[in-house]
Image (cartoon, rainbow, N blue to C red; front, side):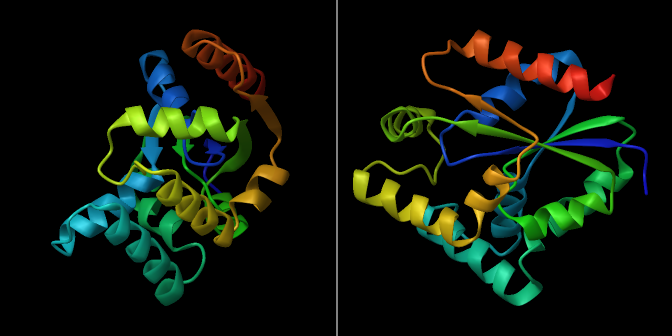
Length: 183
């Protein structure tokens, strides 16, 4: 077992996980985004990073390589990191958590936000796979729930309600929680 603290950010799409990760980067945390691992795999396969392609690829990787497949993609990065604390952005299942537990001490931080808050945020975020219609948003939520994100949220060590918080308040709350885990 490596002596690393893996702070896993979990939550529904658009809840604020990447906002936290980006906001904590200046504090010296190394960030590993599991969605980016899928985007990298899509690039290797010459797939356009569309909502449809990335969604299908995520499901295909899990089907072919097991439910922890996305965490497996990040394993070499985690193992080669010299950081003592890594933020793993986008943990979606208990199987991914099991993969990560073999690499360090795992703490799960769940981020909650209302459906409207998440939809509005995703519309503005600008990633190639972000839903622009309520129908696409609901499809994505269903896919995420289908791979088990609700279980990782339910098993979290701590949860933050990202309702009515400013970006700075969300980042500060997260930082304070993680600092308690570090100490």
